[in-house]
Length: 117
Image (cartoon, rainbow, N blue to C red; front, side, top):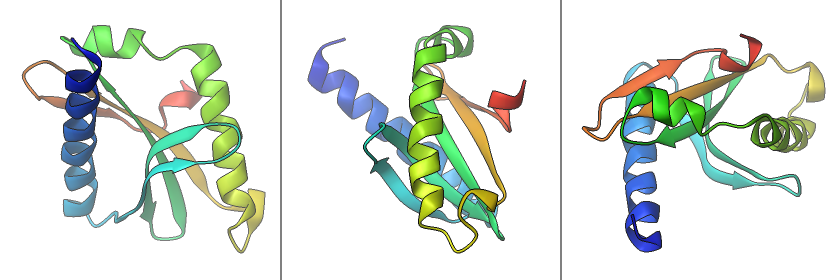
């Protein structure tokens, strides 16, 4: 996949995932939020809880999941920590990390609290 096509496919996947959260009354409050440590694809809220969402797209859900490395998870943790520093409760803010896997047919599988597994 060329760079531009890949970028556009990633954007479309993120928008599809955002719609799922929005429809389930978990508003997406930030897209491609960037801190010094890295970028978070989507940030949603479920009441007082902040949900950090990493979107991975590939030909299959398994291939998409395999694209999430330990190093990338550490960057996401760092960026999330920066984001939480701006919240009223700071690091004590309830939060979780979801991973949304998007396959080549556009099917979406969301793994809630994925980093805890």
